[in-house]
Image (cartoon, rainbow, N blue to C red; front, side):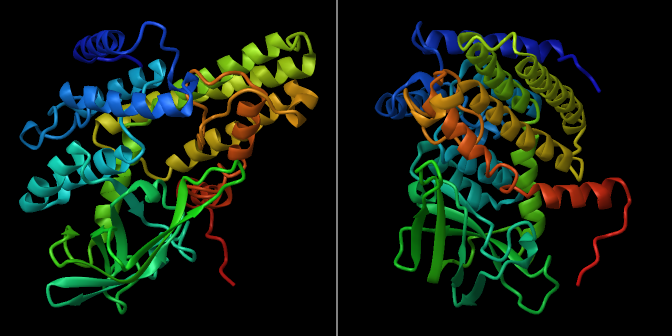
Length: 405
């Protein structure tokens, strides 16, 4: 494990910090401090600033509108944005730029790169991800959404669920079964599908906080061009694994940064409420601090592997358990500190944050309760804790597989 960054990365870090200082208001406390209207305005203006300065798609080659930088530069940029509380783009940019765009650079045809990448950067095409299905979540390869070639178009029928920001997207990259007779990890293709057509219906799912960032997407004879396949037909599983490598790779060190900001708020809450001398509260705060330090060390370990070309494997299951179960316990501690104030909510909330609250979010009872409610799902989405423990047992510890009845 290497805890140091090379001089070139630290020089880039200094430039990023100078850029942030020069382009955010002097009194900027983080995006979590903005009300909903100002937040939307800031994200729109900030995205344009990033685009104008070549910081939207730093991994893409320059010929496609990117900055042509290295994965380490991308990690440094993500770290500094996380510390400053500024976004890396809009909600859809994570799917369009970080996931699909980087995947197209590696797996796409020249025609696909030349058409889609500029439209992603301009914001004309806003993307979401169509992977999970009602009966194919943790076991994604069991997906049933089907695509059949009809002349020069694919005809798609089926549904996807838990589609983040699908209601804001006009394109979806979807895994579809294109060979019903092949083994389940084969016979899957990675399709690019326009959503502004009669055959696509988006239904928002309201969560316990009252937000609707997730959606169901239904395909009924939806169509897309025959050449809107990334990679080879029936080889979409390998393309999806490439995409997931981009999802996990550049965020390896930012979990600790985000959760450090969260426990800083928690420590301040304990001080405000006069709880810092309570032995039980002190013990729980110490536990939270220790878990964030573990996240930090594991992040550096994962970063070292990532920079040597190793994408996260089964060991990523430990990371998922670590942060998701920490998130639940940390927000439960906040409920203890707030006591009966959790029943009389006040202040502003988290603007629908699914994990940690954004930097600048106030220490209000409403914000902490919304975080606590969001945390209940953390051990379920992106692979439940039970599934993650099976992965650890079978893949890392060599234990026998769970018997199938």
